[in-house]
Image (tube, rainbow, N blue to C red; front, side, top):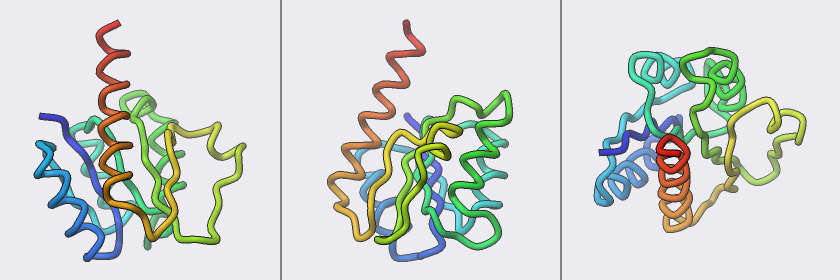
Length: 128
């Protein structure tokens, strides 16, 4: 069963996405902030991280850069959710494993499609 760490400080978003991901057969670890997500990920690297850009304690971008700098998590694929108006500069994207950035409000269907694609791509690259 593929594992997803879902980090967002907004409880309704975690509630909706975790329910939909579980319906599709994913194990979901919910985190309220970047620090909690970092601890969850370093305890057992998931297949994908879905994170909000703006969170307390550690932003999604800071989390992505920290994970990229460590050998055990440097290849972890990331799906970033961001409020309209926030953008991630190309040079920051190049320093992370962010595979896609989706604006909030987002389509749950699109998030599920992107997670499935990321997990599938990661499984293919590990098998190769």
